[in-house]
Amino acid sequence: MKKLISLMLAVLTMLGMLASCAEETPKGSSFRPFAVGGVTVTPDAEAAGIIEALGEPKAFAETGSCYGDGKDKVYQYVSYKIMTYSKAGKDYILSVEIYDDADDTVATPEGVRVGDHAETVIARHGTPSSKTDLQIVYLDAESGTKLQFLLRDGKVTNIQYLKTK
Amino acid sequence: MKKKIVFCICLLLVTTLLLAFLQALTMPKYMSSAKEGALIAEYYRETPDHDVLFVGDCEVYEGITPPTLWEEYGITSYIRGSAQQLTWQSYYLLEETLKYETPKVVVFNVLALKYGEPQDEAYNRMTLDGMKLSATKLRAIKASMTEEESFASYLFPLLRFHSRWKELGQEDLTYLFHRDTVSHNGYLMQTEVRGGKAEILPSPLADYTLPAASMEYLDKMRELCAEKGIAFVLMKAPTNDWKYHWFDEWDAQIVAYAAEHGLRYYNFIPLADEIGIDWSTDTYDAGVHLNVFGAEKLTSYLGEILVEECGLESRKTDAALSEIWQKKLDAYYAERNEGKDY
Image (cartoon, rainbow over all chains, first blue to last red; front, side):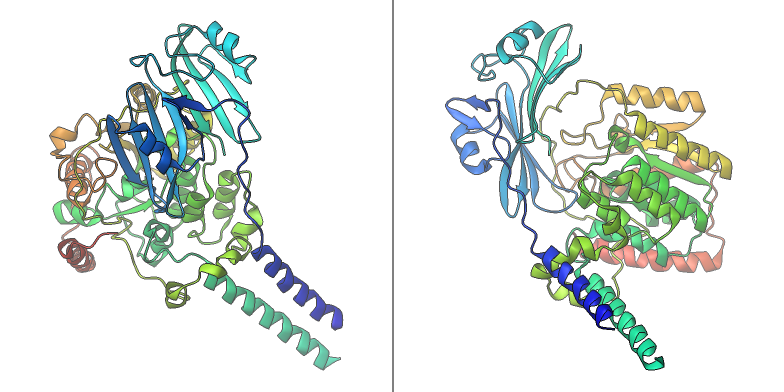
């Protein structure tokens, strides 16, 4: 009988312990994050200060997450755009995308721009995590970030810094 | 000895009831926010007698209004839609729904075909937790779980939601044992007007091949409908924004798929003008989703297709059915005219 009561108490105690589980803290990335005009844009960084420092975007849009927890936002500048997500009332960087070469100051910190050859990517960024005719990918499992170069005919058409978790 | 057995049984019963109570208390209610989380469970309160069943993501539960289909065409319908409903979830919801009824037409919105793997627990929960326990639900859970999720937490959601005890509020007590109806046969009404389409470029992809996993479940839906003698129709809602962009490369694959299998596929994106969609008034979030005014226009257009091309006939001569749907229309217009939104 005592064993049964102990078992019941153990189940309830375990549930109580589960309630106090701590959340994981995101860690830093091993490759250099995107930077423009002296402003560094790191996935998962708080967005407010970064967006303010970058100035007025060319275009802006926001939409409610289907889950209803805040808004997903996109700030489109000349040659690059920044996507953010909301968590607990604050916006955080979700991804950065370099979409064209109109602004020749916009590149990866390692110096790769849209229009560069795939060989330039490898030369400047080193051995990738994966490479196909369509993309070159650098993964940082520890920080959960990914740097992705989209290719067409051997040239970079788009560069994306993304969260992978 | 007998007393001990009775005591043990009582203790087990009390513990079970306590855990069941805690589970009911801590599970999200989806009544005052994120109402889309309540959609899936609402179906079980409906009389299963529908000409058309819609399955898919927000583009169906924000884009199609069953009361309009009844009012204009005498067609009965239900939307088993949910937030970011993945293709395998659509399949299992279809499989489950077909145990209750056999509609004449099943319409599937194709946007979710772009997802080839489980995406997000929050969305999974909004689709799966509302399903009744069945072998179909268990298969749906297995197909949907992300790596971080556990099968047991879907069977015993208390394992997942126990930490909500810190944020329990009045809603958790009010809706401890019941839920209000938030939809109109699966349609979640939005009356707000926030027009204009942002000039944001969609993010390109490395590879536009639709994932094999989602196409496999599209095959399964098609085959299931064929077995039951149901017309399987594909649609893409007219919305096409930066966040949920439908690429031409994907469209070409669906056009080819539909042609190969003799299916009807309606991509409403290029038909938005013909449908009468006015992006300054018919969206509640700058073109991402339709509001009720846009949804009524799309439904009206689709209704004509269902009549003209799928051969559906008006059932308004059925007095009992008409009475049921008049009540639904009354509730629909009460909310529409009140201008209530979420």
